[in-house]
Length: 277
Image (cartoon, rainbow, N blue to C red; front, side):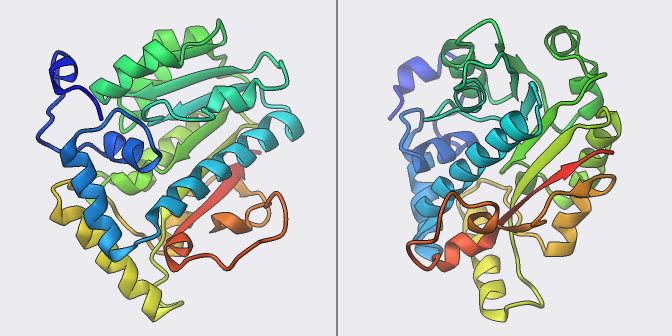
């Protein structure tokens, strides 16, 4: 658990209000969280008790996509939006594990993420952390520091890993994503993982998704939307989906045969990768 005295010296950090980034950090076994974040996560687990497996599946999926983009598709620039707090096997760890000079720019505006990111993620000359708001695509893509690190006239991998489901409908996350896609160079890829509401596909799972969404609201996080397949696929407008499309994370190019049946919780998050022609 983070030191309250140390953390509150960071402007904007409130140890009495839960933070999405800190809740994720607690879920992944990190140390940059407060009791309020632990309580929020444990309340969510009353509805979806295997949420730990969801967090792990999301990180493993991130690793597979980053390897695909860098090793197979030849992408050597990555923009990781809403990257959160440093954890095990961060994006640059995966992208640069073969010694390749892949440039990774992390973006987040949570004050603790910014402090820890600059401290722990800027590990080499090819890795950078910027304090920017991912919900403002023009400001992100026009930022002079970002453009000093990335050549946006060339292909990049744009990452929205577990981010868009924390943007409420009234902020139009599909329009935010579309603006990013419009600014990507041909040959770029975009990845999205998102909480999934299988409305019209599975009524039992649909009810579970609605309960999970309410559990997040109960604890004051204020954001967290389980969206339908059509709503999630709209994030890929302007892109050609890479097979197998938008699927449950364990079905996106798994590293081997399944050793167990996925928990219901794990079926309530999907991911996909799109390529811009």
